[in-house]
Amino acid sequence: MKSVDLRLLLSRSGSRRLFFVSIVAALIWAATIVISALILSSLIVSVIEKSTNSATLLAYLACAWIFRSLFQSAFEYWCSLQASRIKAQLRSEITSTLDAFQNLSASHLSSLLIKGLNSLDIYLGRFVPQLFFASITPVVVITTIMFLDPISGFIAIFTLPLIPLFGALIGRYTADSVAKKWRTLGSLSQYFEDSLRGFVTLKIFGRHKSQPARIAEMGDRYTDETMKVLRISFLSALALELCATISVALIAVSIGLRLVDGHIGFTASLA
Image 1 (cartoon, rainbow, N blue to C red):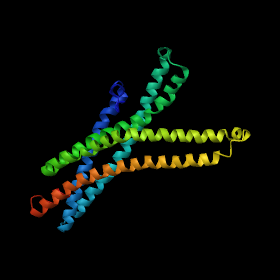
Image 2: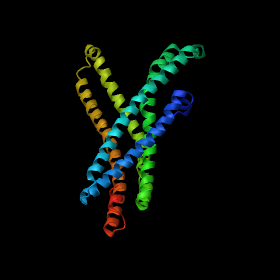
Image 3: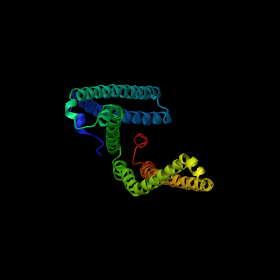
């Protein structure tokens, strides 16, 4: 399943507007992050050096943070409005061309008009904009790092992609195991539900005395399977955190050693 449906995003004026505005907003958001980091590093250096422009830098930093908060709130509000307009447009188009959907059952059509279109609020209003933010922001940040410190930039280029790579490998490795565990949990919960529903029948035929021990056994199995699923999830998160920590540590150690040798400026190292 595609995460971004370009046919949906580029087929209508409202969705095209959302598509391009999300790209521009992601660039602005990434720029505010970079500018805030540069101002903060300059502020720290000015405080250490007891410079006279600390108050000015602090005001700039406060303005940058306020702008970023207001920009994020305004953009999220605009995305929700735009998603509602696109959803209303699609619903109007579908209802005006119901003859083209005669091969669909009434239940399928109602599910499409209600559940399917309502899910566009999350898809268009949250998922698509955040996807652009998550794609563009790292590129802008790494480009800035390359400009300030090429060595750290190259380290980031070679180490940060390890996080999604290991995430994909771990996900592929654990997908079958987790799916098997969930199927086992489903069968156990179904057995427990069937036992409760048929308890009266079992009591009539005198088979109810053996059920408490059986239900207790199934409950213990359910607990064990649940803990196995949670164990896999936590191990996956731990592996990703370890990759992220190693990536950041390599950059930090490199900057620290070069800062001691005087091969990099204090402001650039903090940024």
